[in-house]
Image (cartoon, rainbow, N blue to C red; front, side, top):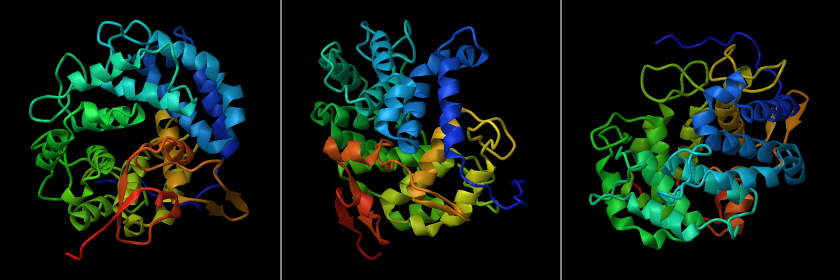
Length: 363
């Protein structure tokens, strides 16, 4: 496996350039005639969530409202509701899906519109609940694909709507247990290869359910820490190259498990910083690749989880911190009193102290 080599000192954090990049990109995404708009038309809802959340971490709320015109964003979101299914789609005129339903609800949480009277939230809850299968798993839409991502999406969506009681939590937790592998990780379904993205979804879903007790924290923490490669970046599974997006998937899972110290935060931060576009802003998957809003969000989110950046004379304090369970600003999670659980193993960040904590037994 050929990892990238970082020969130069990591650059400063270009927060202002990233803000400009995100604003510029969202304007392009709004135009279906643009190259970027055409490529992302089917997942625009998630793109808006990534952009809004990154901006929320980088700048003040009032600035975000002005830069993104959040009133217009919410008006557009409402046009993406699929009356047939009851869920939200990735864009206007498309079919509802659990992925985009979660992105929608996260946008509404970010903009303080979870009580918008124009949205039939009862239908949204019915849509999510209808996706649970008899074995406890969830499909994403009417086409029936099963994936542990969809369990997480369902859990967070219903937590945001205060409707977790509408699904069979016990059956869902039992299904997640069956996706756990010998290495401590979990896959997209039972017997699937362990993957960092799926691990985050499983760990965060179990946190929301208050059932982290079913996880072997040491075994999973070892598997996650083994994802750090020579460059300092993280990969999603063995023998793969590092990718900035795993800065979120892995670091958030380690935060929930109380094992952030099991990787080198300084080396990871240096890797993310090397993936920045120092001229035009944005963060790419790897150094010298083209940036996009997906990796920009996950890079910023990863740096936020690591805390204040100290790089020479450059000290950046994020406007808000991100929550590792909900991928939303921590103050929103606290204000909404969203459920969650973290393990106490290492000394936990005080940002997580409002969660129910589970003291892990010595193995």
